[in-house]
Length: 212
Image (cartoon, rainbow, N blue to C red; front, top):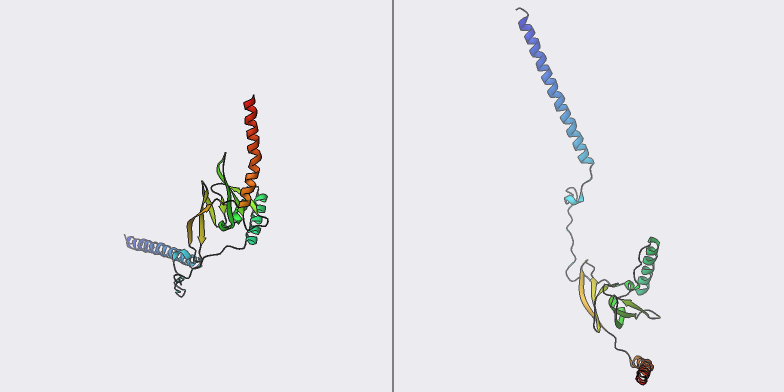
């Protein structure tokens, strides 16, 4: 009985010491984890998408005044032709279909010389007026040009979509109609001369069939 109270006191003191030790270790671990988290946060770069950097001086966004944007002009035709050649060479190396030559031409650099019906549907013949010698190409709806695209082929005219790009990034689309070119008097005379033998041959065939 004499040793009961001292033993209880010792056990209680040991229990208190253990509890204090556990609480100290827990607090120490939490402090270390917090220090590591703060170190990582300080090392991580600031995300630009999160918003403005609070440590950087505020600079207002300067917007261009209205009416200051100008239309971007197309490069010269020789520059466009050289770019087309590079694209064609790259397509050949990659074993893919090369872009068509019309992608280097502007809409105001072509004229419609003919409209035909083919097994693929309506097609048109256009002539590049800025090339020397002038070259002609057969095009179909969907054909791309440097500043537009062929939308539809109608009787006697072609319907294009023109793309206009401005310096402020705006893109405007408009419809442009190109009629079939009227043949010159020389071309009409040449066509009549070439059609005369065909008409004579047809008449000869008719007369021969009538005699039989």
